Length: 415
Image 1 (cartoon, rainbow, N blue to C red):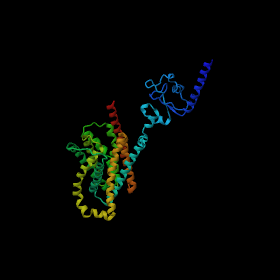
Image 2: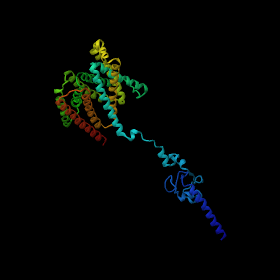
Image 3: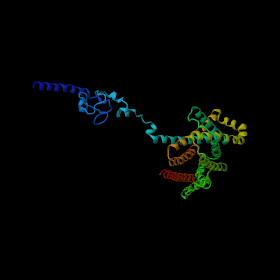
Image 4: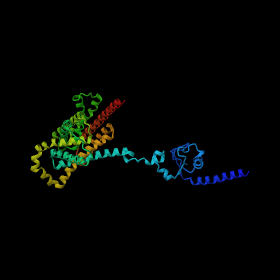
């Protein structure tokens, strides 16, 4: 009896410290030193600690999951210590704490893409408006074209100097591939500026809406690619719309019209040579090299065609009208806007599908035409307005059909 009483008293006395420990251990976490927690996960949160885990601290023989290698008792670690444990210990909370937060671009990709579109449109509209304002007091498109490319080349050289991006090496073989692309780029750029200087910006962009027609014709008759009848039919509204707008355009002259058409042909062949000159180089470096070559192509015509007039009265007249500071700043900023909007167009293309980019390019032309009419107050006839709308609608239909066809081809190749 006495032994039983002693045993009972020992049992009762043994429960007292267990209860005390239970109260003290309520806000802590139980983590086993051998990375094993019996029966249900690596960490146990909250005040309700499992009896088996708790008893294991005082009676290792009661727990089948005790540390058999070291024979040491399991430890009770506080919450702060457990939170700082490494993922290798099987700590879920530690793994969550180690995950780096998502960037703004990852959280809101649609907003970032929308920002790219906005900046592309904004820079393009500003470029066209400032470019036309320069021509109103300095009508020398060959020289202004050289300035556009010169500012862009300086921008590229500075970017290479600071390593953003790192300059890609070029050899004689790559140079031979890029020269035809650069020549077509230079010719298309100069003739576009000649057209901008001669007629209204809205009319030039309306004529340049025919560029898809020239692309389709070159693909069919130069590259030998088969163009579906649906794609040809979608170009009919473009041709009809441009014809309607041209017949009644108040600022129409043959210099502006022919220059815009030559620009269309030049940019079409630029696309053809670009496909043949697919090089293992990022688009930023390719555009930089093309700009450098195009600059050297544009300088001789500017000197031959406009050089004598510029030296005689061109520079002096412009400085007299707006002042030296504004003249130089206008030329600098128009070159920056030209380079940046082209770069943003490339960056936007890399972020979206070709169909989205094609539709965005059409909307960009609508924005440019609309803002140029508002800013410069160009008067257009009703027929010109209707023809412009028909041409833009035709370009949108063409771009949609072509992008869908390219998407189907990629899906077939990947299937």
